[in-house]
Length: 153
Image 1 (cartoon, one colour):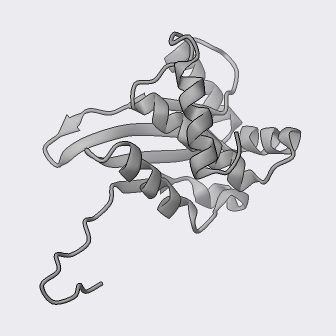
Image 2 (cartoon, one colour; image 1 turned 45 degrees about the vertical axis):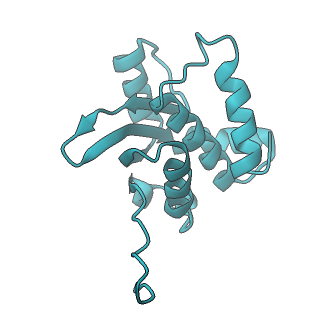
Image 3 (spheres, rainbow, N blue to C red; image 1 turned 180 degrees about the horizontal axis):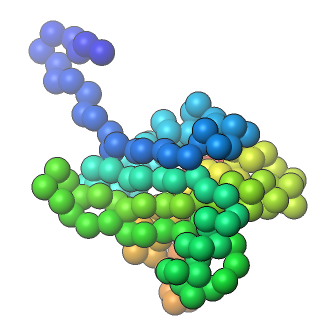
């Protein structure tokens, strides 16, 4: 992409890496990475990267058992990152696609919307929000951001 004479090039957004979509073709939305890059750029402009891994029930159950001591699957887990030499890594998010599919059916919405909802939730956790300890602060923020980025509450 070129810029007009005298104009600086557009700044690069955060690098968002999506892994595991080859196993879950129903979740392979071509616009997902661009959407997530926009969300991260707006909510965490000082961060240079975010990694997302789409997983199945067994892997998510293992992650949940190892990292949270809960022996069951869950929809999303977040692992906040650290600053590095190339800029701050926001963190890593694991999304359980089969669980997202079940929740989308239960809620009567498209899988693409459910995945974005879970990714937004995961990004907020990577930013340090914790709905288990903050007296509803994260829930209120997430509700506002869902209306902004997803058009639902």
